[in-house]
Length: 485
Image (tube, one colour):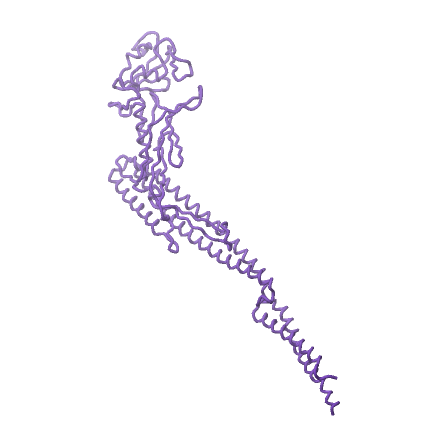
């Protein structure tokens, strides 16, 4: 028997210390709710958990960012809703002003309301903001904004690119009619012979040119009917005025300056003054709607300039003189006149651009860009809009300018709506990732209270048993005293 080394007591003490340590850890886990309270509890698990926590907290903020983005977009879109309403009212007013029954005073009153609406559009653009960021008045710096060209209601086709446009119309010839600025003009003939040529007939015996060609002139035959200054005549072998029968040669005696000749469904009017070629800018003084082709093209040029310059307060549109253009080949060849339009412009502020960060990483694909154009009257092409002229023409052209503004606001609202829909999908996706990552992080780091209570109860029993065994081991050396006695 020995007393220096009580191995039973030492063993019991060691086991009791282990149990006490385990019991302490179990108590800590139950008290904190975490099974990893320090790196020593699970070094690998701690590293994984902290990475997940970084992602979770980053995505939580990303979701908040996206929700703030939705609020900003809705603020801008809500303001543009009112801009749309004002533009619709302006369109209504322009259509009213274009009506010929309005006096100049009436149009002046209409102009007053349009001015007020234009000012309000500018005020909305100037003051709409979200979190101290102005949403509709653009950003720092300026850019040149090209105003859309318009066809002024002319018959033809208009095509345009960024800075220029082209208006194409059919070539005008003697006898053709064309409506310009609401007035229908006719291309007059310089003399009777020129008129007959335009009607593709000749008073001679031989046809000129080949059938099907532009210059073809058919011989008048007996029985054909031609109308001169409203009276119909039948072509015959001899003239009988009582029977309204004339020879073809008699036409040049009955028709004169100012006469209107009709044949085969087409009409030609001769100028009341002689020597006026189509290359002359000429309007018949006795018939203001009878003009030369050059006069017609000049009027087209003027109307295109006026219609395309609305809103272009910094640089007005300019229209080059029409140029003849042949399209096609052979009998399918067509001749047009092209007018090149240099589009007018205004200097406006740069677009507002900002990015919404909707991810937990620095990846640039986590950025959703928002772009909002300046929505003031200048950028919308409405600056200086005038409907108060005495003819109603300006109001008519204003309708197109307002339509362009409506289209621009619609495009911006559509873009904002698309971004909002995207952000709502982003929020749903981010929240789903956060939920599932939270579940995974919980499995790594959170205490399973039921399992841990089992461990706690076990360690509690072991601790009590260890204490009892340590007491018994300490009593085991008492037998030495009986030997000493």
